[in-house]
Image (cartoon, rainbow, N blue to C red; front, side, top):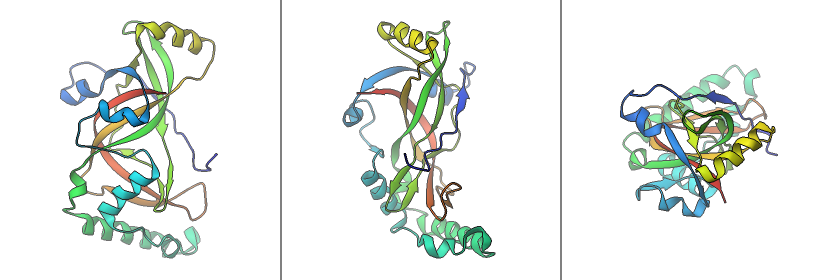
Length: 220
């Protein structure tokens, strides 16, 4: 398994009601059984679906043109006194060059992984333990980052499978799903360039997205 596949579990419970449009739009959602190729059928037509290396690379090409020279920026790593300054300069220069790019306005879709957590009988849904997906590309390893992880995520399965999932969870089985997150890059510092803390010299790119909508997927 890819060495950078590090899932930071965030145990999320249902938030309070009435916090405005964003909370209502992102809150409790049904569990959809769907193939990745059919995502276009449930999303707005202008969405850019970024769930594989090729589509992500095209997105980064449109934003920043070409990958950084990771080796040059890394140098001797954290032992190099100029390492942090080079990384800071890379981010600031790329932020400036990216300003005004059309791709900043694209509505994008990316995936995070999730496991069903606690069942709430009052709403017939499950809270979630979620974490990012790391995708190796020719740019480096890409990890999409929500500007804010929604705090009220809960998935509501169809009644025909809800009790099955509940029994499986009670039996200790791990039940994984995917979360499709929909949104746009934040205006400033929309891409963050960094290095892996787990693998020496491996570049990480983090597109930072303001989340507008989520969908829960049981992928076929």
